[in-house]
Length: 46
Image (tube, one colour):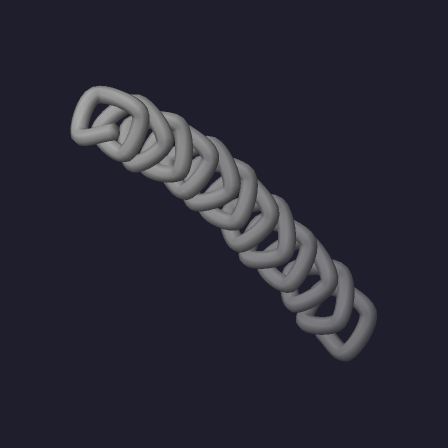
């Protein structure tokens, strides 16, 4: 029973790290998109 719980916990941790990496990638993509939009906006105004 203890081994099963440990394995399950490890699996949950792996899933958490996986989703965390995906969220980080999403945040980086959004930040890059905002920077590009800002550059286009400043380029259009000036």
